[in-house]
Image (cartoon, rainbow, N blue to C red):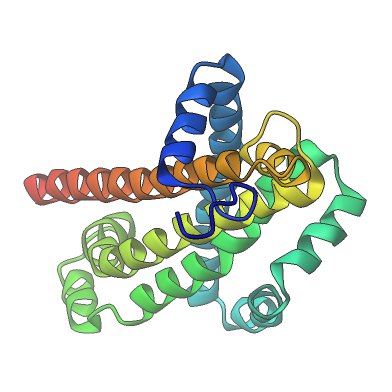
Length: 227
């Protein structure tokens, strides 16, 4: 109200009006769904790769040593560098997927591996004494031990992959995406639209975290009932 310049900072009223106006267009929902689809695909692929890699790293020391530099590189190189490099190699539609994968993989890998390593070996030895199948040992002992690590890493990975995926859409100008709309708002100095899309991003990120929490809670309850 003091500045009174919509280009510099939009008021809550202008932001709400822009959000309502955008919500009346089908392209608004198409952009959100397309962005969510790309980022969630990358997130799920990253989780799958991290789960397999952490198991292999636990089983084979040579694999753990082999993958360690790769994980370190992903953690240390700026996201923008990855986005620009990958943009040279792949189609722009696949860019957010790969970036979300890269953000998810090291976090989930380190958390899952830590959960496996910190599993109570006394329980594992007892299971071997009673000749419990290897599959059941992993299901009932290792998976329960990994759960808190997995949950913690998953919540972090959702936030990071979502933000990095949106950044990839902005730099790559991915059509029908939240990032593309943010870029257009910046080009046309539509600050109210920029604020409105930012609110959408925050709400989606919080909703994904709540949904992930709920899914993991239901999964844990189901496992407890099986036990």
